[in-house]
Length: 178
Length: 425
Image (cartoon, rainbow over all chains, first blue to last red):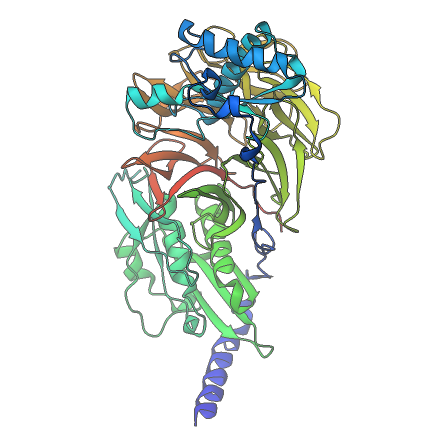
């Protein structure tokens, strides 16, 4: 019965389409639709390499040692190293100078306001200011990679001046931490 | 000339079979001079999983350039010009009517045929017959909407194009691609670290973007055909802000390998990086003009971030924006006539446009945190990122600022939109 109905339906539809044949074809182009982008081959998943922080020297981990402090904070739209952070950078610069094999990744950060790419450049400027100061304190240029995370890795996510101040920051990562 | 400004509030709950969060689109504004149009149900379209006429209607409505007239139930549905009750549509001030039919073919595929009719003249002004598989219903409907849009507005439709954007859910970042109506989202890349600045190659087969998966920004090019990706720039320091040249062979990128953030040209395969800006300032966000002759970019060389323009091979730059102390993220329309950018006005970040010939400016949005604008390939809409209730969301605005749309995903942060190019069939 179902088949019969389907056949009838098909016949009726075919009939409809073909009845005013001449007029029906006029002005109607034949096309096959194509998708804008070919089908996705699936998700590419990214697994970051885990750092081995347990191999870190004690001096860098001891909370009583200034070397355990790793963050430098900045004023709005500024890459000037505030005086309060000079002892910290002096200690890390000396550490790098004393350990020629040690490496450091300096990550600059910016608060979330404005363009992500411009903020990335602001974070870069902060990371480079830190790197310059570390070099003055004894580190070699090749020991340090100064990079920016822009506004992408905020420590604080509220929209307040206190929070933004916390995100205008440079972080020092030693070998084993990145 | 009729002037229509009718606030339309329409929530399209977009159905999807996948468990993934879908974008839903809310239209919050009406365009001027909307064309009154009726889209009738297509005879026989119930053989398909979705009604083609519904998708065509939603597409046209979303563009803001049409006033949809309720077609009601017409029985029997007209499939030929002679069967249309033009008097009825004339009384309702319709300018145009869309009719169509769908039949199943012997090979299991379908034929969808539509006609676009001019109501005052009572003639057919467009019509196409498509042969489609069951999986091509939405693609076919978008193509029909594209034909209707182009015939009636004179501009090319963008319903068949795609968009890319980044979804952040907890600590998971996904680079997704969806149809321009937000449906059919697919994840191209999933990562535990941020992904920013996706941008489409001119042929729509590749995306360049910045990924932080190696604890620093690195530029990749990702093929949507194979799922393979390639590192394009992973130099000392930061690598970011990719922009495609018109021929898709090279990218402008921002590198800090020589100190400071400066603009370089580099092969799309990562070959031959060469520096094209030489300032002690920040130079970033390069964007090639469609004629490939110039690059617009953001620089703070004048003391505050402003938009500049230089030759695509570098050299002297001329300043383009002068009002305000923060103008960033330049993008130029495909006809090269309009610049859009983000301006800080007080504490707000708004989308502005600038007619490059007349220097006439316009504020297009009134958000607090608008960013990352991206032109539709026909230049009629601009997709951008905004914040609603402290959460990232996508929005679009017409180039005249009249039509506004919001695209959102439940329970996720959506950001970094990029509108893909036309697809050449």
